[in-house]
Length: 207
Image 1 (tube, helix red, strand yellow):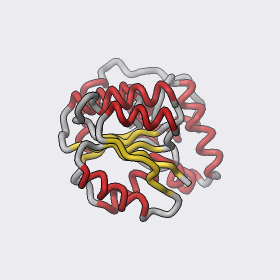
Image 2 (image 1 turned 90 degrees about the vertical axis):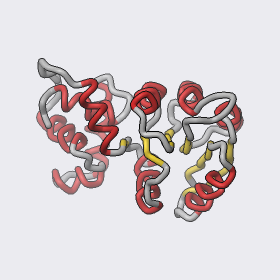
Image 3 (image 1 turned 120 degrees about the horizontal axis):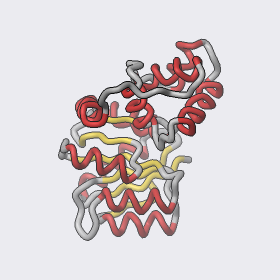
Image 4 (image 1 turned 180 degrees about the vertical axis):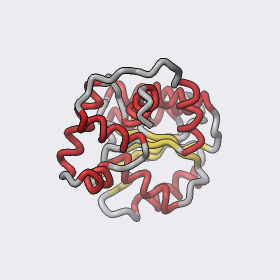
């Protein structure tokens, strides 16, 4: 069972997220927090597998809460959900260790897919945030990558937004093989998440 912590200062939104997450097989909301400080406290007492984190909250914002939760528990996966599609939130969330960033007006079916992807080890950003992230960080000359040809193929597919399962189907290999290649890429490229792999692929002009 994937244990989920929901952090948002609005009770109705927390209740909506709880109902949505509890409807997904294999997922259960075990705790709620109305402030970033409460989220850190709850996560410290019972480490979550996944956190749905709002950005703007009293006492401590979601980015600082994410930083503290990820520092204490690197295995925790944090999905930032916010009303504000602003650059400083996107960059701050990624630097804090978040694995994804979505707007609160994301359709429920897409949100469920995103939660499942984050829990399985993927990272994600909304399309507009990804574009701005690339524009901000990618600049010539092209980065040289010391990786194998197969790892290069996997990196290109990661950068194109494919999940591990989709990469396995595309390359006709097993899911465990893809996970091994992704783990190797994360290590070789000193990347914390798949989002950083996307940046590396663009820096190397692979996509």
